[in-house]
Image (cartoon, rainbow, N blue to C red; front, side):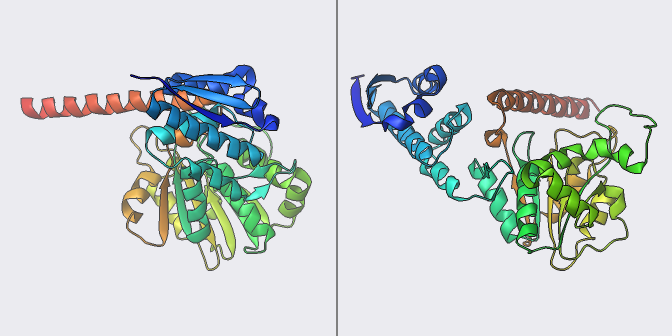
Length: 335
């Protein structure tokens, strides 16, 4: 196949961001697309087969656009652009995500959806009364929901924030912990506190907590209550029982918004127990006022290694399900 070339210019102030540390970003694109980059000053020449160099040109152009918007380009952005290109998704959509800033952290860092899946999730929270965010670790389910809750609270769209999760040990028996009730449940709720501190600030959070405007509590505390004009987040919903999930969903009152997050692959329930999240997905899938957003490994925004871990576990679990299905068929034939 005849080798061709394309030339494009990279603004000098963005070269280091585009190339990455030790040219890591460019090397990843070269390897994925089977192209060669030659850099001279601001000029970048792309060599390879026509289709490949056109893809490389498009991806680098999007990286330049991201850099101009102040994005620190890492493996995550590069891999996501490559994945979009491979799946014939318009890569310019990633640049458009930068215009959707939910809020800023206490350090001034903008909180934005970083993938198309996250954008769909955020839009669903804005537009629907109840949103389910289902996906693996690292997809930003809880963090984005928290950012949306704090933004709604600060804009006085809701009068309080209620954060809850079932108090289930993650495969460990904690026993009789010392201290008062709050001390006993705090370990289960710590991830919610961490996100609140980062986005709202510890002082602001504590002040609103003392006023009762922010409540962080185990799911069992929701029974018997009607939650009006509140932004409610149920985290780790895969660890609820069907009864608990029904109880939670029927607490939601007028002027409220609820987000339920969970990862169906990380249940800490007893092996013979049914997850309330699984039941809710079946029962509520056709209710128009309820949105179900399924985030995938492509939406993982933690370290790239997390994305790889999620992927290999998905492959392993799919094989295990296939093997169990085949065994059931064999047993049915033998019977």
